[in-house]
Image 1 (cartoon, chains in turn red, brown):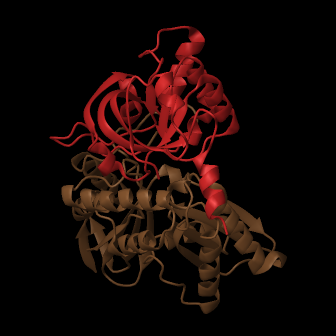
Image 2 (tube, rainbow over the protein chains, first blue to last red; image 1 turned 120 degrees about the vertical axis):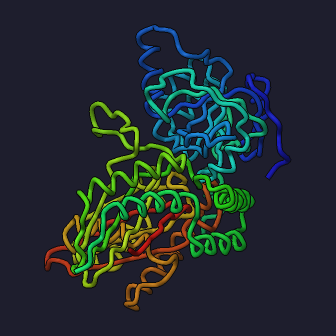
Image 3 (tube, rainbow over the protein chains, first blue to last red; image 1 turned 90 degrees about the horizontal axis):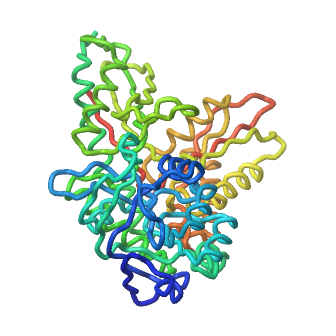
Length: 184
Length: 281
């Protein structure tokens, strides 16, 4: 694995051009949470032409539904959820300027094509490492859809959030590369 | 006859919801450490390091191992000499789940109807309660929080008896490989074979509670478990699906007699956080 590359948000095109599948990174700055139900709402807002809860350009969405925070925590355990469930809802967001996604597990061809077209990157965080990842979250506030409970959109301030570049802007896919390398 | 007040069951369920979500069973942790040592891929090592650190943090700080604290699957073996008193058993169990998820800062992951409204129930109820009457005067409660990521990779197939052991092997191995990184590998592969379909699924689910890696007492099934584990770990999927050797850390097959026409198979995966805790009243 590579030396750790430090990324800060907003995530600009210049920052992602140099990222390659397999790079180890840390992310600092503001990111937004969003999973199944929030994605449906975002797509609905786009289709209806109503205002989105945050500007997508150069932002990162983290696919997560966190645990409630214990006293003293900004947020409870907060590892990634399976990204594939968001595949059919992703192109519309990337087309509006979303630059990064954090989740776990592979993406389909439609998403990868859209990532190449829109110069977006997909990061994998370690699934099931929710308590560890929560330590990188310094602040959290609900900014949209509070009625969704854990699926509400949270604005997070993160410091050195650990991740790996799973799919880069050229469509190189660590899920395919890694599996092929170790298959017997 | 022994009277057991359902309030005591509420209390135990509450406690088990919290401990099962924060304290990974030792046998599972030992298997993960073993896999970490053997892993050859740098991504695999990196992922497993995170996973093992996370297990320690969760235990020390009494926080959830994974934010997906699951639907509350609860098995209860009730001795036939027990008389439950003090209220409705199912309501007492739900109350335990409600309290445990609130007091343990666990995520509410249940939605009311699965198709139309999908509104979060707000307290992780209802529990999925499965009771069984057994000899004796004790009540054994096992809480198995089951996350969505691995559960979504479940597969079932009604194989023809003529497809034999090779058919079963192929179906199980393909199910695990096709799941790729989605179920948070390294996984426990739970397999049920035989019975009718609800029985097959229950066998698969219950096999996940077996001590990690303990072989089936029937040597034919134990051999099949070992063969499937070897095949799966040749796939290259690896920890988190990013490439490596350690795709599964155990294969547990449980079986039941089948119809002369049938060989049903269910595959139910558990992520590396193979959580379960039990108590006896």
